[in-house]
Figure 1 (spheres, rainbow, N blue to C red):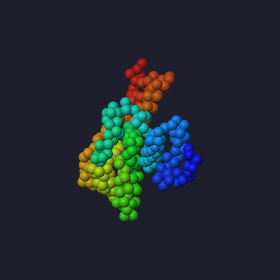
Figure 2 (figure 1 turned 60 degrees about the vertical axis):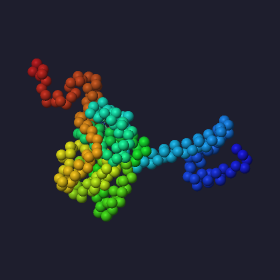
Figure 3 (figure 1 turned 120 degrees about the vertical axis):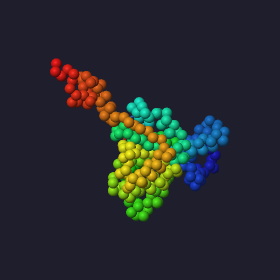
Figure 4 (figure 1 turned 45 degrees about the horizontal axis):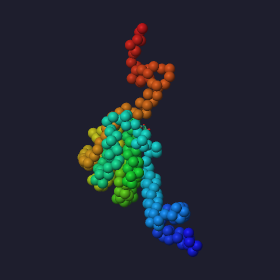
Length: 276
Ligand code: ADP
Ligand code: MG
């Protein structure tokens, strides 16, 4: 490096240019470049690529902090064999293809408790986030509560606008909204505000027919369901609770007990050999 090189000034310039990663890495890259005789263009390219990679990493880190996803729930540790009605290829396509998010289409996961709806929805959110999309995971009742407060403070519109920056809003346990929460219908306003613009991913234990208590009246329920399903993919995870199933499997595989004794289906069912 030349004697009259002013490293302090370079640091200041890089600050002004907002290139923190270059500022941090250039001495290492410059030393290698000097030692290995890189052409100047190669050094410049290496620095630019490093800055971009760091920028992407920081952005994803920031999005991850904002997203409030469920910790540890990924597609890698989701057992697709447990939900044969959900195709892994279809889920992968949704996680790769950005068509539905650009069009504000929705995804709805339905099924009984324990079937993996929250896990799968958070994992899909994570996968999309890693590709640069902005995602927010929320329990529906918590979000409704926040929106109700905003409405009371005459700030519902700005609260909805803040949610607009999320490409995907995951509303977990959609049908758990209580009657008094339903009365203010903030959820309907949220659905209407996002319709055909911004995507929703809903999970629900109850089928559409039982969503009456989520909204103040049947007409609004119909209007809301209509908007939600208009452009949507629906997965039905009609499986037995994963936790219960795995607990049973462990029991069945455990030593000392014949497998058929472990299933609760046998409870109360007289054995064929009872009277022998
Ligand atoms: P739901 O939201 O449908 O009630 P959850 O997603 O909360 O169900 O699943 C309950 C538990 O079982 C969670 O710990 C989840 O990680 C796990 N689980 C459910 N389904 C699967 C699956 N197919 N593969 C791996 N873990 C699963
Ligand atoms: Mg759940």
